[in-house]
Amino acid sequence: MAHVAAQDSYPPPAPLQTDEFRIARPQIVGPPSPEPPFPILLVGPVQKGFGRGGKQLGCPTANLPDESITPISTVAKTGVYYGYAQIIPPKDRDTQLRPEDIKVLPMVMSLGWNPFYKNKQLTAEIHILHDFQSDFYGLELRAVVLGYIRPELDYTSREALIDDINTDKRVALNSLDRSGYQAFARDAHFDLQ
Image (cartoon, rainbow, N blue to C red; front, side):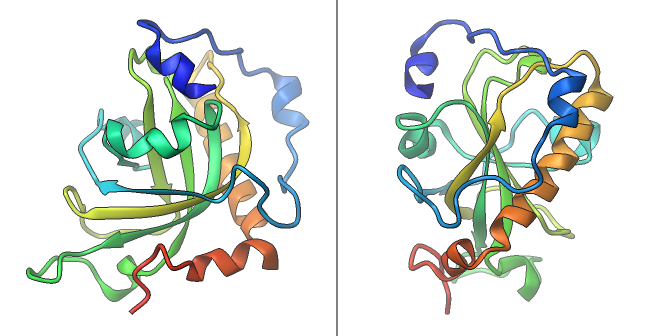
């Protein structure tokens, strides 16, 4: 369990990604609709991370503060997950977000230690599958995590990591494209006004 790993002073070792794993990856994961412990609801202000997602991996992420990940880190193992997320702009000030930026959108989330980068702290990094034109640091992010894609892996190259991230995105979209999951895009956890 992630919460046990989170209490350690060092990250647990992650298996190394192999060609066999990459070739055998399914394009849809999970049952026809979420099963316990899903859905898992997360909420928190978006904070600055390491700055690697967008710059080095082509996959910018919204990072949640440590206290916001307890609902998932106490019931789930490290790895990659899928679901929906929404950025909530403050009602009392203008932002540069467009109307399409604040819709409920598909997401992929990494919960783990990022072994390729040798992190010493458990993190939750959400990549919303949308092309944002401006950042949204400090704004509220709400997420509904609906399923598990794969375990956390270590990589021998950045290119192999990027290939898996791109596969994760396709698997998330394919997995969410089922009626048992689509209903969660209208979950009461989101601001649907």
